[in-house]
Image (cartoon, rainbow, N blue to C red; front, side, top):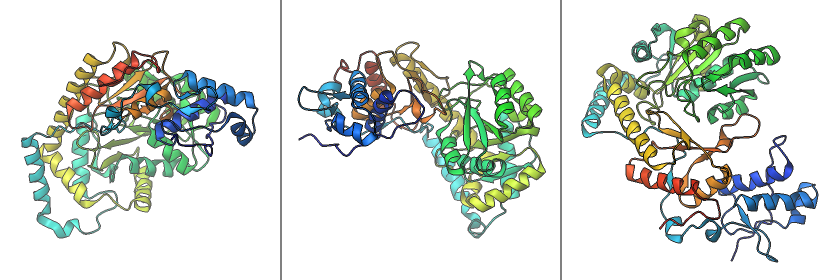
Length: 464
């Protein structure tokens, strides 16, 4: 029997378009998250209109729009239902398969037996002084761990004194410390118009207003940044300038220089999230190498060594900023776990971290070649060393409908809504090809995505 969703009320985003489209968007979003499931009955049009306080024709138009997107079906005289196996052409055998989660942006598992042996050796070695690892350590990292961090950042062309570095438990903790230090509640922070979802979560937690800035092929529009500085007096510019999550765009050196100049002119600090900066074999210098005096630089280990290595390094503009950040780290996270910091330091000094980075880079490149062979030409943006893709959808697909369809076939992806700061999200999805250990799983998932892209929602062929 079909499940009844008569109690379902859509959560509408205010100010993002006509109400009927917002309702259709909400249907797609709730299908993508599992709040609505295949063959579930939606509320009667008049009932939903009464619940939302809108007119009947708006709901009728919304259901028609959702049907055009392949999200719902409305058999005559029976009501409106979330599309099931018939409409999406999903056979039972496929629906029953284990999920292939391409939604988490993790590096590929590329551990050879030799690399595993080196990692285990480093893990064993740090246990020699167990008592030291069970004590509180300096807030912001021990001297040895800061020195190792400075050594690691030299790989990015940054010559930073260990005293200016802080060791923290991951990049998210670093961003939390920086934002809570320099951006009081209610203030504005600028960022890319499509940005890291973790920043959106922190902005919500800290009651900050994000202002998305337009981008072109070189990165954030510097003139738009200057205009935003004049209009909003932002407390910071956050950016992810190398292999931007989600679009994989890498900001040009000229654009980095232009943003630094604007930041200096208006006294606005830049928060540079260099999560993916170590991956490319060649890339522009970090913003911190161009404008150290205005940049808070964050480099995490999770994307370039392993997702479970929750450790990051912060370089602040000056000694005063470093001291304030240390106090914020102490208040929010106390310190990085000594075990994790000691292990990262040892792997850096022994070269194990470099070997892990090279292995991740090599495996990412292999998976990018796989994607290039399977996905339609010019259908996505990426870079050779990246482990995520930004797929631009053909006209017949809505991003939420495709996300729901892929979810029903056992594939998890992320629609552009998760990254859009304001305005209408583009018709695009992010697909992560790291994380999953087996390239064969990646190949099969990409083939199903390619098949979906080449058909309309109601014509998508069954995967046997």
